[in-house]
Image (cartoon, rainbow, N blue to C red; front, side, top):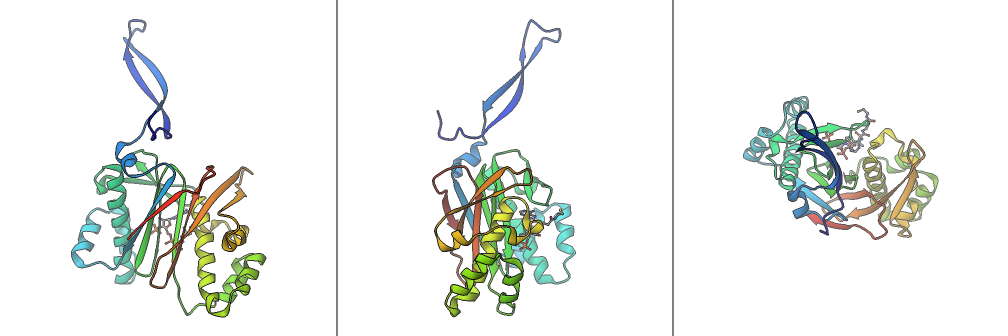
Length: 272
Ligand SMILES: CC(C)(COP(=O)(O)OP(=O)(O)OC[C@H]1O[C@@H](n2cnc3c(N)ncnc32)[C@H](O)[C@@H]1OP(=O)(O)O)[C@@H](O)C(=O)NCCC(=O)NCCS
């Protein structure tokens, strides 16, 4: 059996038959299927993380804008400032280019859908590919997996925000205790690490910030005593998320999270 056989689905095929009036017999298969292009690049137990610049030159901007959907262009045009517009076009254009490569499909032909809380997914072509996007400052991060729901977050470490006040409001008691235990120079960085880890998990769950950040306790992840976290979904089903912090230099902090039932840690490949 091929090592790529984990993704499965049900499809229907019509075969010639002498037993039916139409001469066609419907057969439902529970069969192995996969998109060869996705498989070529991504192992099932792996996450690819692409860090891309969103400060792009005019020609790149044109190329990115040309492949956006009408809705994406309209969203871009709603930004009041040119810088925000450029960065939106750059991140969504590069997202399309990357996903197009994985699916072997022209980037402008990709169609996206959105989950209950707005998490985008690839609606066409239908493949096992899962992805998530985050942008901050002049960078965007794109996480891509073969089948595992994933979430990614990148944060520029802004100096002008009151991290103590935000931590008190959005982090849980033991996370705040962990933050206070850090030596002073590491406190601000610790704050952004926590934020990125928590947001990546909630994005992997598809909830985003519709679920309070304080509802998950990531202290064990921050202490390094666990690499995964479980919490009940709305239907009380327990969901497990494996998390890895990303080493994005230049004043940024990032994290990627994957929903997984596997015991081994997934493999992260970071591309810049
Ligand atoms: C998703 C969310 C966490 C983004 O936070 P952020 O720090 O501003 O932004 P990031 O750059 O890290 O991520 C943004 C990207 O995450 C993706 N995203 C949007 N909703 C998402 C969700 N629920 N889960 C995971 N990813 C999501 C999108 O690709 C988005 O990019 P875009 O805004 O350029 O289209 C926040 O907007 C949120 O909580 N949204 C959900 C709120 C909700 O419940 N909405 C319901 C109405 S649909």
